[in-house]
Each structure stands twice: as structure tokens, then as C-alpha cells.
Image (cartoon, rainbow, N blue to C red; front, side, top):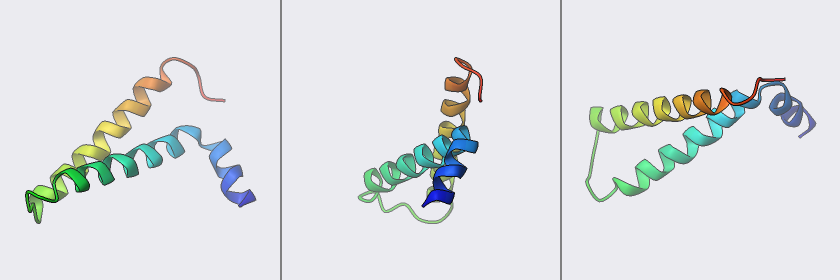
Amino acid sequence: MKRLGDWLRRHPRLAAWVILAAVLIAVVAFDTRALGLRGLRMVLLVVGALGVSAAAVWIVSWDRPAK
């Protein structure tokens, strides 16, 4: 647990991106389950969620510099 805490302190933006991406992918999977998306369409939605979460963390990082 200490190693995880050390990693989170060393890489706050990467940790924020991983957490936000996981939440967005879960939301996409939950909301699209009734549509029955498979294969490439689901992959593209997941890639889009990864991109949106990366952009969000990058934009939020403009406000203050990393330590």
C-alpha cells in the first residue's frame, strides 16, 4: 500500500488520468449495454473515452504546475 501511495505522489497526473479513464469506460459500458455494441464500435468508444480523459487531465493541469 505504501508503494501505491508513493507512486500516486510521484505521478499525480497519470494517476488522475487512470482513475478518470476507468470511470469513463465504466460509464460508457453501462450506458451502451442495451445497444449491444460489439467489436470495433466498442473499441472506438473506449479509445474515445481514453482520449477525453487524457485531454481533461491535461487541461486541468494548465491551472497549476506539477510538483
